[in-house]
Amino acid sequence: MSASARPELVFDHVGLVVRDLKSGFANVCGLLPIVSATKVYDDEVLGVSVQFLRDASGVTFELIAPLGDESPVAKIAASGRGVINQVAYRVKNLADAAEYFRARRAVPTGPAKPAIAFDGASVQFSSPGSPSWSN
Image 1 (cartoon, one colour):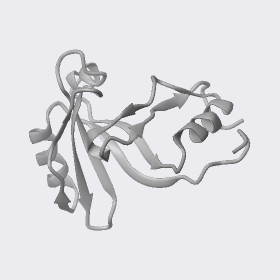
Image 2: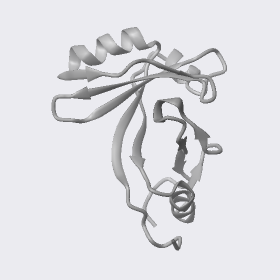
Image 3: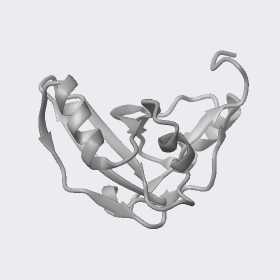
Image 4: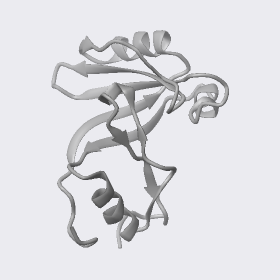
């Protein structure tokens, strides 16, 4: 795939940083029409505990809590502010998708890593390298 061809992006979930999963679960369920929840995944590699919630319209939310003081979301969670951490998409080829986003100044925040919540499939986080996602 060339860097100019957009990969097929399939929406998967919105990630929300919470202080802890128990209170995050209670808060989200009190606000939204949540109809199902997964088990809790403690992911030592990523440094987070996560749980996925699905609302009545089929939208999935990932609650993300720090797994220890060195977690990449520890400072965000400690702030006490509700933070949308990510909008996640599934792609067929992670390397091609990463190339596409890098070509548009969206830079990886770190290397791709396996995630236990996705059966060991790699996840990659990127953020815009300029004030705007547009070219």
